Length: 224
Ligand code: BMP
Image (cartoon, rainbow, N blue to C red; front, side, top):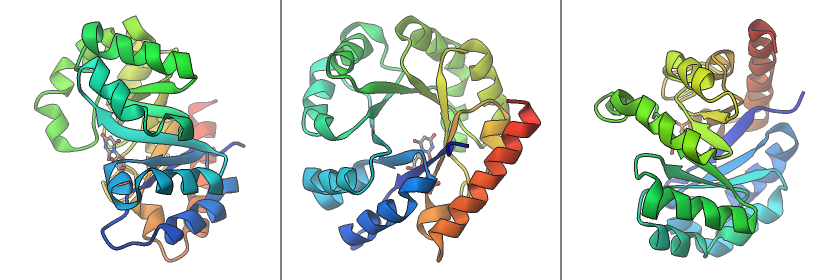
């Protein structure tokens, strides 16, 4: 079975790049890929991203949670676009002058767009989740490759799965944030994003093997 795990690489200050490059090499055959965000970019810059890319040929996702006007998002991404397979943006910025242009740019360079539909923290209920059907409308108009929905609220994943059968669903919140490995997959996600549960483990390889086993069980339980 192909792994459904995407590792979130979120270095705390002072961590060496070598640590992440060797982690990525050691996990490469066991995971679907890796996701980096602003902590990684501020710590190691574009050369760090290039080094991570070189350490594993799995999926590499730039998670800058973009939420700006089109030309600023495109200009931001132009620095990293040669090294990543996917990019995460917020869906609430809407289509005209925002996501339409971003999608056009990413299509032209063969990089996948992933939109945030709901987040794993409680604050997502304040604004984002009460507008979830509108955000799904944005996604439906654009048909990005992927959508983010929280493993911490599996009922939201089921809702997104029902409304967007065409989407690859990525579910964060597994481990430290409270969801158990498999919760997201069981609810209809394709991948679970896992950070500290793996990256702070004394034996990341064993933890990933365990998560892969839980995912296999979740897939059997959901019948797929
Ligand atoms: P951890 O598994 O260590 O809690 O990390 C979660 C990762 O998923 C982080 O990289 C974070 O940016 C990301 N994430 C999240 O936690 N909740 C969301 O709703 C969306 C995310 O991308």
